[in-house]
Image 1 (cartoon, rainbow, N blue to C red):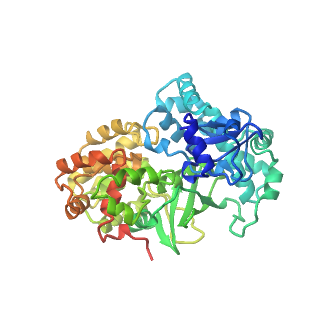
Image 2 (image 1 turned 180 degrees about the vertical axis):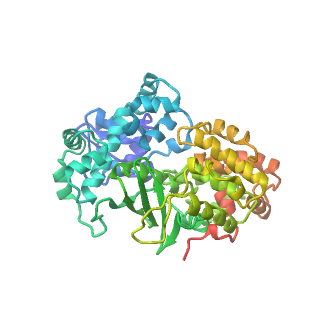
Image 3 (image 1 turned 60 degrees about the vertical axis):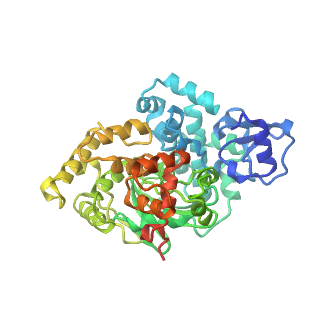
Length: 490
């Protein structure tokens, strides 16, 4: 979008928050860059240039605006909508792969050379993978500086910097303030973490956001010991690269409140990225709802409760296992099966607030499970053991870098995997916004009530007009039912 100057100028002049994260405005006369909704008086069009990323602005020598704080805008919805090389690379960078494995590790995961990766990102985003990761480190550093009392040296290494000097230089260059000045300027809040590893922060999103089916689904399907709904917040344990964490997510009108307790602060960037992905916070609800409203039978559902998101996952392998456990059984039975596995094979954790006891078992741990101990039909045992063995040995990769169509084909090749299981994994684990469930009973029932075709083939043909947002159409169809997944817990 940043190449459409006229459209960008209109968005800046109208201070349209829907475009935050889509592009950034660099002001030639001041040397700063802003989000489109910056509250200051818009500069003259001839003094504005537009960039596709904050890293591109920083590469060009611009510093972040202190008023609108463009580093805290929602991420671009492009990286969740697309499955090409650039989008897959951006999802990996957000997950901290460059900080942990370097650019060679990023390239190896994507199956391309480092030169190809750098050339592609530079062409589309105006910055290479190192610059994009550096911008992300700067954002994480600012968050730690402003919300924790950690010593600056601890902040530097937790944010992923290799030295305190590099940390200081980057913060000054990006924000035109030293780390100590950032901390002095930050508003003091009683919600800020006061013990090592504890953080409170706000996760922004593009309005509108309907929390009912999003948090309702997570709460209704919560696995005891791993997830719970408590005092208006969804809480769960997190398995992270350097340790583990516990997160509490609370919906608010203009943000999602996030409380994180981490065993290792180096996992902060990854934890935030996975929580945003879980709640689909980088989606563009205006684009989704506008497309779905073109169907006269679907439009009333959208108008009644706009802004529905697709509840996703913080662990793709975990969700795949739970999808198999949930085949042809009720939600309660699926939770019971999962809870037994958690108690027997999950890693125990300490929860300061009580209620959460384990991490969900890793694929390697589940691969060691004796099939005879599984209380399920023999065919489903075979499906389960085949899945976890493929996940454990790496022959099946459900990570954010995967190609959606290829991964779906690999899933369908496994015994016991039909279209429904593969598509629900594509929708909620892989993050494909166009995944569709025409054979789902709830979808077919809702379609029949609305006057839509109810047979899978006819419904799929009708749903072609909803592309590329059919996963969101599923949420609106499911919402016609009285199932607990559709309601925010009281």
